[in-house]
Each structure stands twice: as structure tokens, then as C-alpha cells.
Length: 157
Image (cartoon, rainbow, N blue to C red; front, side, top):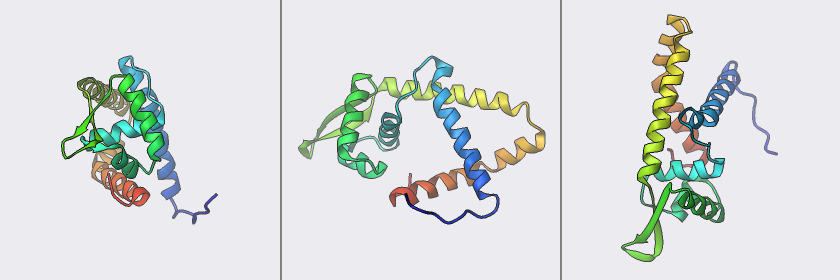
């Protein structure tokens, strides 16, 4: 187990609050539209392909810091679920390129709409000052997401 230095005051609480919120959204967001949540490895692969369609298995493995064999397993499952399609790279027919299917894009949109409504409803129960602070923090949270992703893989989101 790798030891890490103690986070600065308040940073641990923020990190754990963000982790808890993101876990709940990932876990329960799909259920809001009647979908089963995907296993973590499949969700990771699908997100990587949606962020950059046309990636190869090797490129997805590099972007997600996963083993190629694990990415291949997730890709097969996602193809079976009708969420990914693959086609030969026109420049190198030995390489398969991955694309999200229209179904995957539609399900993502439905989940995002449901999550936005769910969070908006929860925000209605908070004070105006808390809502303003959270909305104002959106750019900082996006920047933090990019920084955390790049520190994990060395590449960014």
C-alpha cells in the first residue's frame, strides 16, 4: 500500500464529500431512468470512448490506466449490451476502433437529464447561499476533475 501525505486542512473533507456525491450519482443515476448501473470497468471504458470516439483498445487502456486485456473484456461486454460498436481502422485494418452506439448516447443523455433534475430537486432544499456557493464552484470542480484525471494518467480528461 502506498503511503500518501496528510491532506491540508479541509481538503480531506472536500475530497470525501465529492467522492460520496459522485458515488451516489454513478450508483443511482441510471436507476432514475430504469437502467442497471454498469460495472466500474465497463463504465470507465464507455466514458473513455464517449470522451474520444474512435479510440483503439490500446488507446483506451492508456487513457484509463487499465490493462488491455481488461479493456478488451469490458469492450466485449459493452458490445453485447449494445453500447459500443467497433470497426476496422481504415489506416490499419488490424486495429479496431471503438464508437459509442446511438443507444449509448441516448442512455447517457437520459441519465444526465435525470441526474440534473435529481440534483436540482435536492438543491431546492438547501439555502440560497449554499446553492450559490455550489453553482459558483462549478468551474473549480471541473478544473479539479481535469487535474485529478491528469495526475492519475498523466494525460488529463
